[in-house]
Image 1: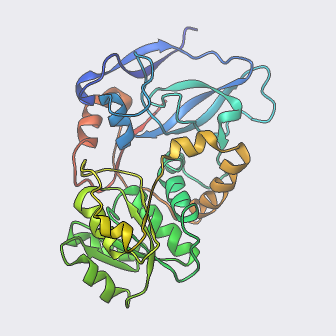
Image 2: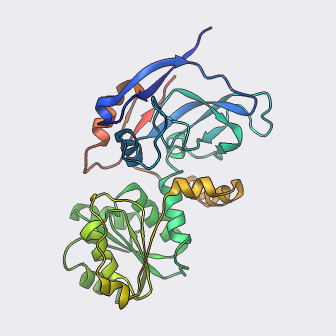
Image 3: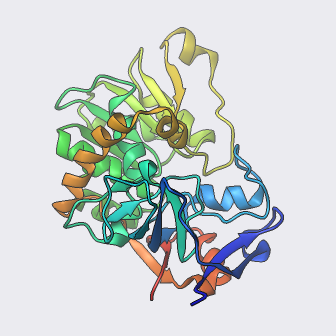
Length: 331
């Protein structure tokens, strides 16, 4: 029985839809300390596209299989693996390449997902919800009723920030580019939702009753990030975790001199690599609880089989989507 898998591969950097192909590979064999995971689902994240383009800080040896995120079911255990069972749903680490039918992974790097969470949602808990959790915990000591502000609030990470903040009793001022998103994000728990523009500072002040805002979350850069910084109270922190506009942060000297703002950044893969297994689980536990109660559901615009990888990548590269593009792996 010579079982095989399909795996996405790129041999050179470039436009993802052009350089990615799908090839047949032998079925993975687990080493003593590994488990074989049959993939259930894997999203296409901006970082995946950046890595294929060669614009990401980590460049794997080529040819490489992309995919920083995904979930699947354990179908085989290496001889030395003790504390895992076959059939368990697990979240994969970000360094194995999830865009393939099955993969052998070091057993101690897998995170077991509790019952009651769909595999498709489990596949998307490790980057955006975990980033949102760290953004809300690692930079400013927020108390119930405190305000924070974020741009690109309709992104997957932005929606996670809204839902987690709402659960924890923090208030969110959410900045978007399209008015049709306002009602949607209010319904998900956003306290204030405003369309970005030159008058943002005044609009935020009016909408929040002039409350001090000590945390800003920036995933856009450029002028949008500067408008966020201008909404912050003195001594506050702006954390950058994305650069959708591809524009640098230009900070006027006065914001540093007179407002003493702090500018920080987060790269969740780095946090994950540096965290102990206990620290990772400590962050996953509340996220699992929220997911079980129906929160943190990432919106999906379309699911593709791996065989249609080129079409999926072209779709993922489009702006103004209503949700994630994902790969679903059938039998």
